[in-house]
Image (cartoon, rainbow, N blue to C red):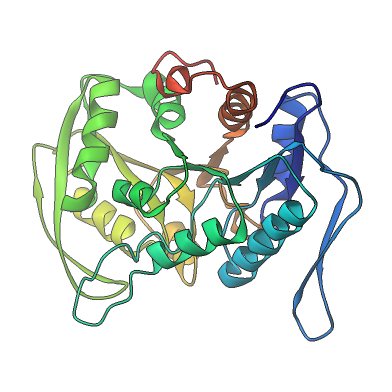
Length: 320
């Protein structure tokens, strides 16, 4: 069992070093000394340069692009800490990749989210800390404690100052209704739904808008934006329905393939995202504003280390 006579240890892989460094600053500490690289044939190489014996270790690594490489880095780092006799290992995964493969949508589909959960547990993680899983039931895929923090607290606080009688929160599809309703309740405004049909993966055909949006300002809410097809076609449908200004927000800015070009050419006036995924400079266009989750994750890490309740972090009044 962990004792708190020694400092906690933070380590980071290569997927989101800026966020890891910001979390370390919030906790008034430094990232641990570790070298995460590759052998000449591409195999992941991890060299831990300090002792972690008996320590409470937190490994910060989003499993974002390149997804498989980031995941492998996380697994090898967990194994390194376990073999270094760490007292407790918490995998801090701001963005949990493979979360969309959480069920059998058609015959013979894999449930890769469960597979990845099993691998992380088998590697030696004692706990997982993440933000806005694509599907809440993924928490049950892990046989260890998992904390699924809520990113819309930060996003809702940002948009609070923009809300007036003309503001409507929009769900980009039926699957996101619960998430959009939560934000609408926080902002005390109306909600609408974009009814769409998906002919096949990454292709979306917009059908109609459910709700009153003409002459309104709208905020499209989603947990992640990948190729941006859904959100940009949703914005187009809202524009045709007579919406004045269109905002969009998400927790995870995957923004792969044609996403940036689509957003540039879309009717979206501003897209607000969280920094669970580190956006390279070429994706940081004027339409995109980035808010940080560093304070929220730092508070969660501190509470886990001190064995304090996590309930305050889920509160609307949380200070981060």
